[in-house]
Length: 167
Image 1 (spheres, rainbow, N blue to C red):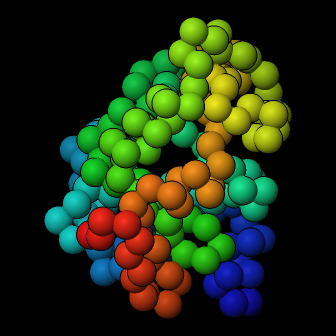
Image 2: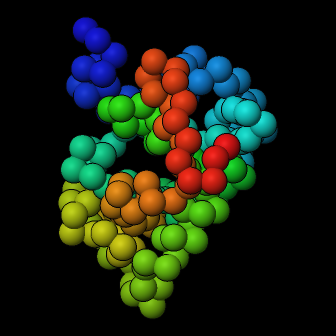
């Protein structure tokens, strides 16, 4: 089965995604200290947090985590320089700070966190949501908005395409 079909069939666990990113981009895996800071690997001198494919990706939405299931700071406030989202086309790599600034401009921070399981990304775009019985807080943003930020595509064949101010 070709890699693209395998990615489409599975919502890959994080470790497999991290290793895939390292293999095709020539990055190196981080260590345990890096993991505590939400850094999975190092690429071109930058700390990268790799995110596996989620159900919302195919419908055009990316999940941004502000608080994790334990209520601690989520990866949007981690130590990574950039976030690499696994998509069918490869990895969409975008600066974490730029992504956070964009999200903060879209979300009404006065809104309460809505608790619901089995969340439909289209319904919760730019709204704070978390799951019942957990302390997580996240939102969804449109992939197209993220792609308006400076970003890099690391394609599954290892080629790199830079959009915006470059890498």
